[in-house]
Length: 386
Ligand SMILES: NC(=O)c1ccc[n+]([C@@H]2O[C@H](COP(=O)([O-])OP(=O)(O)OC[C@H]3O[C@@H](n4cnc5c(N)ncnc54)[C@H](O)[C@@H]3O)[C@@H](O)[C@H]2O)c1
Ligand SMILES: OC[C@H](O)C(O)[C@@H](O)CO
Image (cartoon, rainbow, N blue to C red; front, top):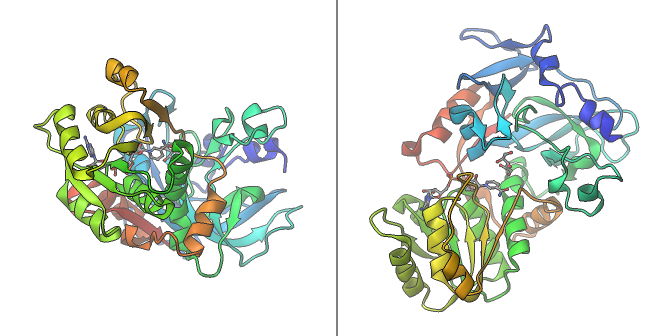
C-alpha cells in the first residue's frame, strides 16, 4: 500500500470528512446502539468527551478492517481531553477520536493484503509513518521521526478507541496464542519503555533509578527488571503507587518524594536507598524537579534518560552535569519495539497483566475516562474491552 493511500484514508487524514459524514453523530443519553454500531470516544476543543457513532469503514487496498478488542487509556488521551493540547504542535481544534493503545481482530482485508486473514489477532501500532524511500527517518529505521507520521489519537488524527478501525496491513503485529488482547494493547506503553531501555544502554547489573511509578514508570520497572538492572530504586509522590511497584516487582527499593525537600536533599535519600553508586536513571515524569533529582542522584559518567514529557522550557543544573560528565538524553515515542514487546510478553519475561486495574465496555468508555482522570480512583491502567 502506498503512503498516499495510508495517509489518504479519510478516516485518519482528514477528520472533517468523518465529522461531516451524514452517519457521524454524537450519541445522546437514551440513544439505542446496535452491537454493530461503530462507536468511539471523542473529545473536543471545549473539553467535552462523549461517545460518537461513525460509519463502519471499508478496507481499501493494503488496509485491514479490525474489530478493536482492547484499548488502554493513556495519560495523553486524558490530557488532550482536559487541556486540549500537548505542547504547541498537538492541539485539539475539533472533535477528535481518542486511544492508541489497542489490540484487535482482523475482520476484513483489502485488495493486495496477503499476510492477514479474518480471525487473526494483532497489536495495532498506532504511529504509521510515511514509509517513503525519500524519507530519511523511515529509510534509516528511526521512523518515529517521520515528519508525515499519522499517529492515531493525536490531533488531527482520530484514535483507535472505536469498534471498527481501519489500519494499514504492515503496521500490525501478530499476537501469539498465549498473548491476550489486553496484553497486546499494553504492548504500546511497553514499547515506550523498551525504547528507553535500549537507548539508555542499560546493562545487566546496572544500578538504576526510575523516577515516577505511573503506568510508564511501572512498565519501565518491569522491563528494567527483565533486563537485569540491580538494584532498582523507584520514586513517586504517592505511597500507593510505590506499594503497587513493590507488589509488581518484589525487591524494588522505593523513595517517597516529598514536596518539602529540594532535589539535592531527595537525591541524598535516593543514594542512601540504593547503597551503591547509581549509573543510570530512567526519568518517567517529565517534571523539572524530578529530572533535577535524577541528575543529582547519579555518579560521575552516568546516564539520565528522560522518557517523561513536560514543560516546553526547563532548566538543567548545568555545572553539575558538566563537572560529572552526566549524559542526558530523550525519547520521542519508539521505533521497532513492538515485535520485541510481544516476544517478551509471550516468553513470560514481562508480565504486564497486573497493570490493568479497571475494565469497561466500549459503551461505557466515557465513564472509563472519568475513572482514568480521577486520582482518587487509584487506577493504573484503565482498559476498554469489546
Ligand atoms: N517520550 C515518550 O514517547 C512518551 C510516551 C508516553 C508517555 N510519555 C510521558 O511519560 C510520562 C509518564 O507517563 P504516565 O502515563 O506514567 O504518567 P502519569 O502521570 O500517570 O504518572 C506519572 C507519575 O509520576 C509521579 N510524579 C509526579 N511528579 C513526581 C516527582 N516530582 N517525583 C517523583 N514522581 C513524580 C506521579 O505521582 C505519577 O505516579 C509522562 O510525562 C508522559 O507524557 C512519554
Ligand atoms: O506512546 C505514545 C505517546 O503517548 C504519544 O506520543 C502521545 O503522548 C502524543 O501523541
